[in-house]
Image 1 (cartoon, helix red, strand yellow):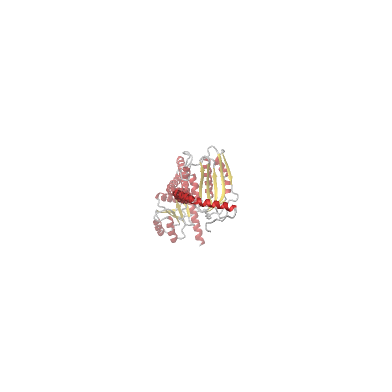
Image 2 (image 1 turned 90 degrees about the vertical axis):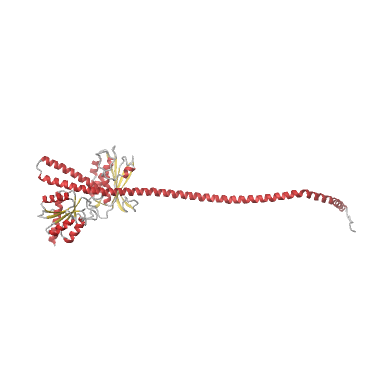
Length: 488
């Protein structure tokens, strides 16, 4: 029957009692639960609201943290890139500064080379004009001394001649700096040349100086005029001596070297060189002194102690020989001057050009045509030739000389200056050789043999000359002409 509870055991009865009590209490519990839900509902909503807000805030915070992390990585990347860029910029700036310093050094070296070149042209021109004056002075001294009978006059003339020869030596130094001195280069064993100078070098240094010679045992031969090389070494040793007033050591070293492509205008060209270095332990040179060391007449010595031509002569001789000079100097520690001379491919003792044999013969009557655009030199040279015994014709220009040759077929020799206008000596000779190919020709110049102006096979006598030198050269040319004529 519905609603009836059947109890089968004591335990089931107990369960039934509990169930009845629960059923009785259920309405009350339900009512309590409903009341509690009504009270707790707003709190639950607030909790859910707060939870949602916290979750949203957390999401926002997480998003912000992620954004900050990304931004931090961006910042780190930018910092790294900035550091790399800064380092690159600093490196580029350093390279730019180094390039600027190198460019300034190269410009300074170029300006120095240009200044020396300009000074060389100036001193060469001055030496040329000065040699013209000395030719007139020495020539007339020789002419006057032939007729002087008073002993006092002879002594005065001799003093004048000595002074004029000192002037000629001075112009020779200027021409060496200007690279216009006459050279007879040949293959030279520099070790042997220095050994031969041993006594002279010890005498030049004096007792308070010690000399050390360090030689490369397998030294190449060098192409250099042996006389000029000896003067070069002597100049360097004397400079080293003067840099050590309290005594010291002068060291002469020889070595072989090969130089690569040139970096500066004053550097020796690329090639093989024999290097001669003269070192001292003296006062050294300040940079401003070193920059002017090769300038003629520049000297730091007291007045009367030096001409200022020593290093300029060394520089000119080395450059004219195809080499160069370098100076390494530190104030208070000494100076080393290195001279680079081109390596000779010919055997030692071989000249670049075989020297012409000078034949001394007694000439008969000869007619000499003298050409010079300096009237004083022309008249002095003509007077010397007449005093020797030649017949002389004079021309003050190339055009006048050509006219005389056309009108006078008895001319035996042409003696012409090199530097003339408007027709130069070489141009005059070119025209003469076309018309008179067998006529002996001698050049005369206040310079040395100007490179590119005088062709091979022509003799040159340099102003100032003595009557004896002029006569020997003319006689040799006439004798060679006679030998060619007889052979033909």
